[in-house]
Image (cartoon, rainbow, N blue to C red; front, side, top):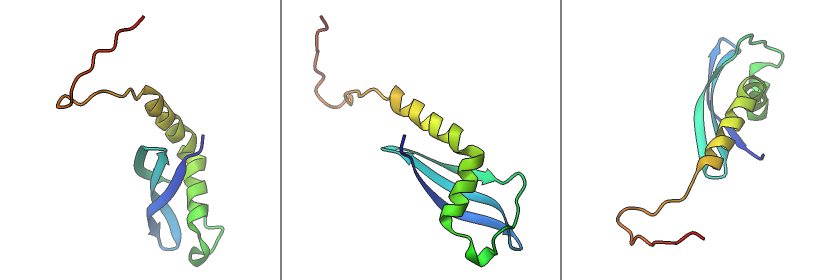
Amino acid sequence: MNCTWKIIDIHADGELIIKAKYFCALDDIETEGYCTFDNPKLTTPFAEVTEEMVIQWVKDQLGEIVEKRLAEQKNDLKPVVAPWLPQVFTPTL
């Protein structure tokens, strides 16, 4: 599964990043939310933190469940005809 991750916003206490707002997409299924870091550690100077680093922190904490839920939603999508469009009857054999 190939999800696209982005960091929209971060919250910090001094130079310690304590929360990040993330965006994750699997094709046309998208979600966003906040990840509060359980045990934030400053191992890299704040000015040197990259989006990729924060994405990895979010994925370490929430990545598996977020990606699993997106995959479930994608699998549950069934196309329907909008009510204002002509309805077509298709017999099943």
